[in-house]
Every structure is written in structure tokens, then in C-alpha cells.
Amino acid sequence: MEIDPITQKKTDKELKKRKIKKSKDQDVTASEVKEKEGFFDILVDTNIKISESELRSLIDNILKLGNNFVKSPTQSNLREYRNSIKDFLKRLEKHWYVIKNDLDFKNATPQLHMVAEVVDDKLMELTDMILKREKNTLLYASKIEEINGLVLDLYK
Image (tube, rainbow, N blue to C red; front, side, top):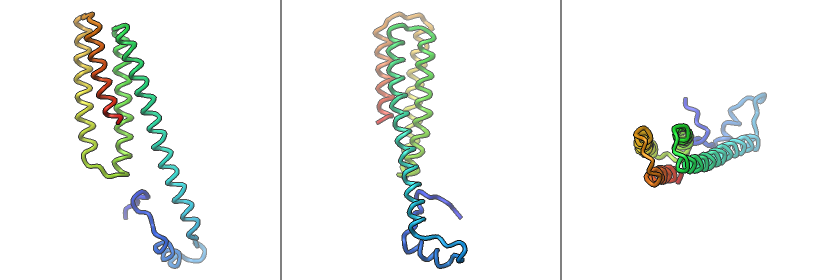
């Protein structure tokens, strides 16, 4: 037996059949079941809205930390920037998992991992540049803008 409340919604006829089969002490009306389904739908919608607002705030944080790094290319600013991107990718993967369950996209997760690898490669390039003590701010800014573009592509 598989329980999946998202994809296995019951019709009124099925609910009535189940009501007849139940004993009198366990009698459930159709309106009570509709209320429960409505509550579950509201709960799922609320979780999706919370996830979207979290992703928006994480993107704002990435952009802010990227600008801080461009202004002052230090090891600590790079570390904060990298950690913010890692947090974003973790949350995005969790959010995409919810969408995958709801909409049944089969290629969503592999695309996410492919883009995550590209972002990670760009971050490694940026780390190498810091270790070599390059001070060319325009080069840093172009890498930051490229990474931010990839992150924004993931969000859309």
C-alpha cells in the first residue's frame, strides 16, 4: 500500500463508497474529508511560498556578498560568498525536489547538478585567483557576474 496525498486525491464517489464500508463508530462525512484536503492543499501552497521567499532572500544575500567581494577581495569575503552559494544550492535542490514531486519533471534534478558543477568550477577558479594574489578587480567582477548569472538562471 502506498500513501501519497498529493497524487491520490479521492473523488466524492470514492469517499461515499468508503463511508458506506466504514462502521458506524468510525463514520466520516464528505465535508470533513474536504476540509482535510483543503488544509493539506493550503499547507503545500504555504510551503512552496516559504521556499520561494527563502530563495529570493538567498539570492539577495549572494548578490550583496558578491559586491562586497568585488569591493574588497579578501579570503574572508570569498569564504562568505562561497558559503552563501552553497546554502542557495542546498535550498534550491530541496525546493526542486518538491516541484519534482508535484509536477513530475524527470530532467530537473540532473540539470540542477550540471549547473551546480559549473558554479563550483567557477568558484574554484576564483579561489585560485585569490591564492595567486591577483588584484585585477575587473576580472573578479566579471567572474562574480558570471556566477551570479548562473545562480539567477537556476532561480528562474
